[in-house]
Length: 204
Ligand code: AR6
View (cartoon, rainbow, N blue to C red):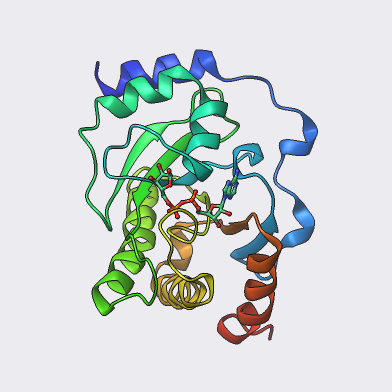
């Protein structure tokens, strides 16, 4: 099947969404960045990013949630994507999700202290996801905390990588997106980001 066939199938699979799924308007930290603590499968965005593994065939964590919510067609399209290398990202439709597209990024497996190359791979996940978003004119994108669950990357160190990467990317590419959402799930991650965000995105 080609991309247009998947798109057509995804369009007819989409469900009408309840009002609560609409992106919350009161979580905006600045012009471009938001922090929310929600189930990412409930966000109505142009794209949500998935913390996938290199098979792209689903798994636990946020990947499992996204596949459950999107339905079987997502798995079918993912099978046609032929996997994905660590640090890279691939695009699929969103099917029954409120998000139109899913960007499947594969983070590094870092049990314990991450190495310099694992840090680079995590950075590349965010950069490559944003590259895909821009190439496909997707202007609102939500990210989960890639690699910080099953893949064991320490949350604190990951947040530093994420914030530095988003900050640097926005300095150059700000006009290409409307909103980037950091979607945390656990309270500890919310606390980490609340503490660190003002350091990277000071409110003028
Ligand atoms: N919405 C937002 N964030 C979530 C959700 C959700 N519904 N569920 C979990 N998180 P993980 P990884 C957070 O383990 O470490 C899978 O088996 C979670 O709290 O999902 O990159 C894949 O198939 C954590 O902060 O992803 C891979 O094999 C973050 O999502 C492997 O796990 C990432 O945790 C990927 O591991």
